[in-house]
Image 1 (cartoon, rainbow, N blue to C red):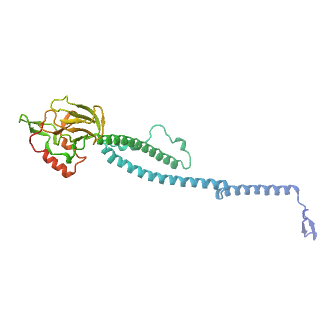
Image 2 (cartoon, rainbow, N blue to C red):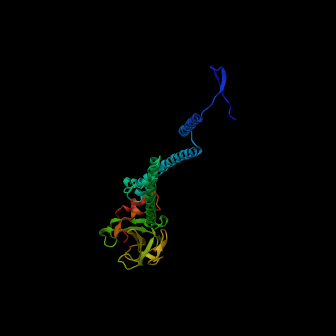
Image 3 (cartoon, one colour):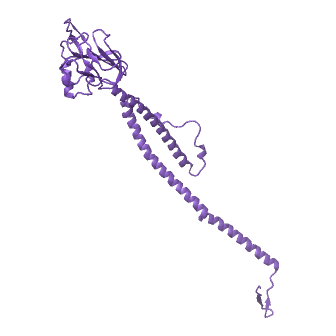
Length: 323
């Protein structure tokens, strides 16, 4: 129940009841409601500027966490780039040079991505620049890894070929030092034992007793084991691949057959004096691309520096050959 209000009438010297008109009451109520509504709208507007809702707070935390994750990702990419750059440098300056491959040009390793804008779908966001830049770095890093991976695959194949080459190339003395009587004659001009005329001797002669073991100087395939070549008597020829072939002449007997595969150090025959020979010895030759070359350069596999020095000294003497 509303309170009744009075006012003092000075003319009548009495209290009179205040009568409120309905129109005026409605006016006051309307003004009050409008003011309340306006105040509410201002409160919402100002509050939205200075106070976050729970949903907005959650979204802000999510954005902050995303930025943190991108920062961590970029740090990891920095570390990956440092490691990859180190591998690339070693690949170009050590591995590829060692195996005879050309270094990969820097522009090929660092080449970008042309054509269509592949990051267009990432544009238009508050953090678009960060996201786009990170994606670019990831794409370039992936491309560098692919290039380096292919390079390592190539190096692997070259290493296998190199390993095969090192195993097949003639690299040991065909007769053991303890079995030698002496190194009779080297590569170069020597006196022919039969005609006494100075002529070119295209191999090395190792004097040893009849029946002394002879060993393959590298991996390969026996191409010949016969006596059908003039002057060589019973002899063996081994094809080592890569253009190399070794020849063992004046044998007493064979220990291999044609087309047989042999390994370095396998027993292939025995010293004799068959063919054009003055005494039991092994005549040893090496061919490279069908040209006879000095065998003195192919004993690094089983001679010490001192032994090689002595052999080199004896081989350089211009004496009489044994064949």
